[in-house]
Length: 77
Image 1 (spheres, helix red, strand yellow):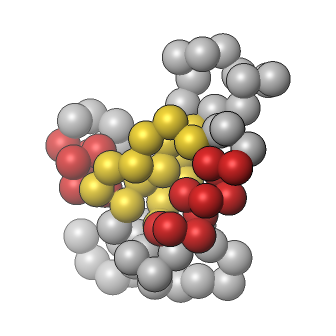
Image 2: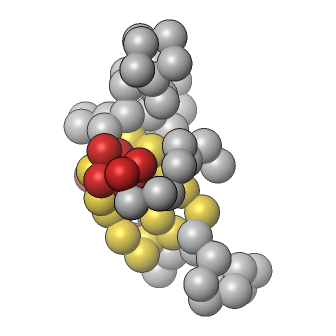
């Protein structure tokens, strides 16, 4: 994957390549099996995880390469 097509961290203003997938859902609006995703660089993984975690939304954090190899496709939402 080239730098131009590499997924970019979801943190506001960050342009660093993502290496983590944060799978989450909002139980007030999503069905239990639904997973939304944010992607994070190494620097922002903990911050984004905490943001989702304190709200009870965070379900899983996995390396991007593992997510893609498991068929999760490229997470963008």
